[in-house]
Length: 255
Image (cartoon, rainbow, N blue to C red):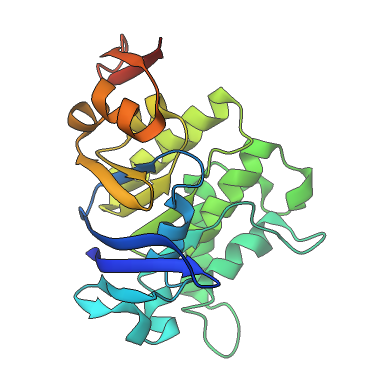
């Protein structure tokens, strides 16, 4: 499943945030989009997910302009978990996850295939025992896994996530990114996530895209992208990059 941006220009109220950006996301890999605050990371993700119509250029999903495709067809190929999603008051975990079946559900509600997909998503995210509980009763890490379970129940080959580790403590961040890595490996999904933590991005992603000033500054494997020169150019950060003693991936040590 290929997702590609060609000469993409995105913005709000006439203000350009992303300008003439071209990007081809590697299929079957986990891509981390990193960059300083306000550089356009979330705007780019919204454009890739068809939540924001381009001012110019286009986004291609399997070679077709994503904005010309029927909504239901896009929703069967691409799932998006936005920042700070909001759930209805009192909704249960299972009911939330079942909402991910909307693109597939027939006129008579959930069918056997839908219920199987919900059960599988709950099991994969470790929430099988929590389906009947209110979402609000879960811990922060469990709630985030419930939202990911909803996206998984949508059963798409492409999964886009906007800062999924925000507000999570470090153990839950590692747990969540490990889950995404397993999902990519197990089903060959293409996972694209916006992250702030450079070390975690380098450790868990196969491919890193550095956005700065509304453009791509660098992209490629973490070892080639997370370098002192790139960090200086993108973040204005003077740092030493050393091998992570556990994973061997780039570890950023600010000076």
